[in-house]
Every structure is written in C-alpha cells, then in structure tokens.
Length: 401
Image (tube, rainbow, N blue to C red; front, side, top):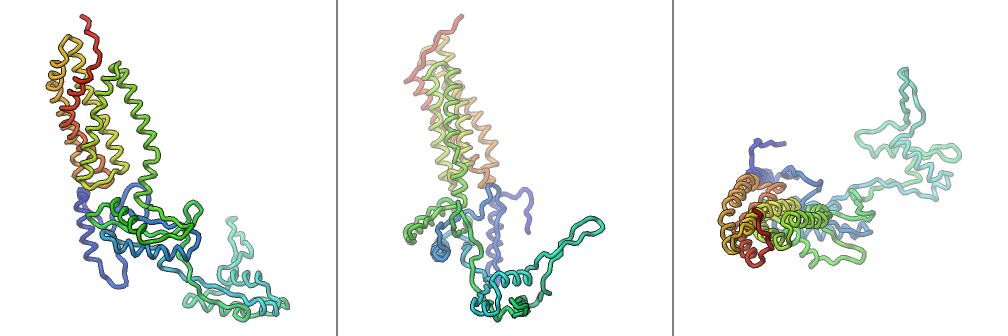
C-alpha cells in the first residue's frame, strides 16, 4: 500500500498511478493493478457490461465476445470477465446398479461422504463453565493430498459390511463457473474494465456499447445493460426530476410574492438559460460529463443567478416607482448594479477555483458548472436582462411620499 502526501493534487496522483502502471507491467506470473481509491457509490469498476440470460454456457460465450471488444477498444485497462476463469468441482457419480447389489442407498453414500469430508455433529460436551462444545466426527484429514481421503472412505452396506466408496462410485473433476450472479432473480455475467488516464468514462462506455450493438447478436431471451458509473448515475438521477419541478415552482412562488407581477418574475428567471449555456460549455471544454454532482452545481448556479438578477430588477423597479422614465431607469440600473453583481460573481468564482484546480471527479464538476455559468450569465445577462426589461416593462406603482 502506497500513501501520498496530504496536499497531493489529483493530476499528481493520476500521473503517479500511471508511472506505477508502466513500471509494474510485465512481471511474469503476476497481475498487478494500480487503482485510485474512489469515493461514492460502491461499484466494481467504472465501466461494466451486464449480460442477462438464463443459460450459463451462452452467457460465457457472449461474455467472451464482449471481453474481446472491450480489450480492443482504446482507453480500457484491467479488463475482467467473471466467467473466463473456471473453477474445478469434485463430482461423485454413483453407479446405482453396483450400489443396489450391495444394498447401499444414495442417501447413505451422501451421508458417508459428508461425514468424511466435512464432518457430522454427533453430540455436545458441556464444560465446567457451562459452555456447550459441539463434537463432530470425521476421518483424519490428509493435508498434503486431500484427494487421497476419498480412497479411505468406506460405505456401510445393508448387511453391515464396509464397501470402499470407489467400488460403487466414480470420483471425477468437472469445470464450474467461479460464481453465479443474479440481477432481479435473473442470471447474468459481468465484464468490467477501468478507464486509462486521459479518457472520459462516459464516452468510452458509449463507444463500447455501439461496438457491441454492431458486432454481437444477442439470442432471444438475452439482453445487455450498461452498469458501473452509468447505472449509478441513472439511479442517482431517479428522483432529480421531481426535485427540479418542486424547485421551479418554489422559485416562482417566492418571486411572485416578492414582485407581485409575472413580468418581473420572468425577467428574473431569464438569467437561468444564460447560465446553462456557460455551464454546459465548461463541461464540454474540460471533458466532463453531466454527472449527478454537476447537476447539483447547476441547481446551485440557478440560485446564485436569480439572486444577482433580483438586485438589478428590484433596483430598476425602485427607480421607476420614483418617477424615472423607463429608458433611464433601465440604463441606470444596468450601470449601477453591474459592479455589485460582478464582485459577487468574482467572489464565488474565486472560492470555487481551488475545487476546479483539484480536478477531482467527485467535486470538480460542481465547481466547473458554477464557474462557467457565472461567467456566461455576467456577460450575457449584462445585455439580455436590461433589453428584456425594456421590452416587457412590469407595472409599477408610484412611490408614496
């Protein structure tokens, strides 16, 4: 286990991990994986392809095809197929004809094998401390060659004679899947991989899915589902629609109570699309995707933008209430309130800059969308909000002396 200094940045950690991957690659007989500790939902790997279907043999064949596609896709590392490396089970095939001649039942054979290999509880021993100790009976185990234990097993026949197990049964080996996974009570196989440095996980997942749809033909009753970060994001976004609707209606209610007019409310809310433009452009330029954290940042950005817009609209309304003409009130409000709005936005940008420079996949998207949205809302809102106010002037009551 390797630890870095506490103030190490994310780019430094990524570069260090990449150098370790290059230095530790190629050791014969070993599989060395260098991974960063990831916070957030528990997922096996960022990119996972879940193949769902009833038959294990078909799942194994499909997972092999998917594995080859993922391995040949640029930007993937540490590709893992859960069904690739099989385990070996010991099987006992009972010759029922021979067992019948000796008067031995299959249940007796199963009980004897369990007694010899795993042991059976025969009694309990009570100590002076009133603790019950279980007593199990089994044969003396051979730690060097466990298979020789089967040569020592003898089954009791109907006449009471002891018959060696191998006279009535055959001990053999059979390949078996390492594990059988279930998703909503359906069998599935899982092929996963990690993302190399400099590649976007969401874009890489989309590229892999496109290749699978083109090159792999799924039989009837089988389907493919992208898991990993994509599934985790979909689950996180499951209730975000309801939250956004409640937020919008809450903002409308507060603004209508504040300004008493629909026009003023619409003018204030007009800055939200202006900030969305900058937020989405910032995500695109930095190579980030619209994750759950980025969506939370957009909601926070809307609150900051509305606060800045309220300063402008409320000040302009106050000037008109004093008898100032519409044109002069709009020009005066845009000029007077621009500096406080600019300073407020620069303060927020300055506070979020360290989070942006950290380049953390968990926190940085939030800072990116807020910084990009504030920049675009300041530049565009400087023009759009005054023009919109001039075109849709709300009704204002004159101020009482």
